[in-house]
Image (tube, rainbow, N blue to C red):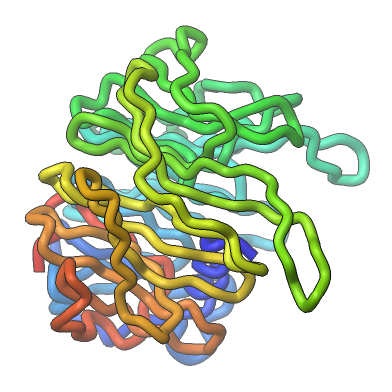
Length: 363
């Protein structure tokens, strides 16, 4: 089981805290599973330190815009799962046109004006035949009852585009997008293209997944098939390592040199610190994940919170703090934070599923 799989399992089971007064913007959003909320749980928006938690709506998969002003989320019914966008200040909610995938979340562009989501194609019997990408241009003023249209970026049928939550990242200026894709059921590579025209894409790293755009370069997780010894027998598995590469495809360089051991596959990139010196991620495998940092210049790996399965969910705007969650199966999961070196851990919210952070989160 990959780190991302464990992470999704953990966040799907977590919860959130009590409610507070009204708010116009937020820096953290999460799902509350306190009690027995059902498919559409309370969606909470709170301050940097978890204070002033406010219920904004009911649903799942909340995604806070980088400027903290908008909240995208899913609403589940008996027949369909649909996306919504809320203006936090006015509480105005509008639907997104049908087509966004039920799973794999979505991602805002850095200017908080567009929302990229995954799409699926299926054939008879509901069998998936491809994964693609679509984009919703969110208007400056939301008009109740007026759906936000979707524009196809990459058709789903025949393509294997990694879902936005793990496989899409944007340049700091918001003009370019990094994404991982391949033909259906084939290993992905990382590409970079102008958001305005993804057909003008350039492959920057082969056999790679989950690009993360930093201040000047990209990080990605490169994957290869290897043979390992497991219980006295040799078996095939995957091996992961973190690489960096320039947006034009030059300068590709391995930052880690982990060798897969049994069902521990290796490092995985999730975030950059703002100074570009450190990549924050994890070392994951089957039922195993440890938060870690990877120093870009020295290629040093530091495992954080040793002995505990955790995964990072955000890095603060000043690069001093990592938000993280446990990755063990339970009905309640705290949202916690620690310094970049793993010290000073403390709890932000006792129960917080699927947390999302604005770009200026700084506890």
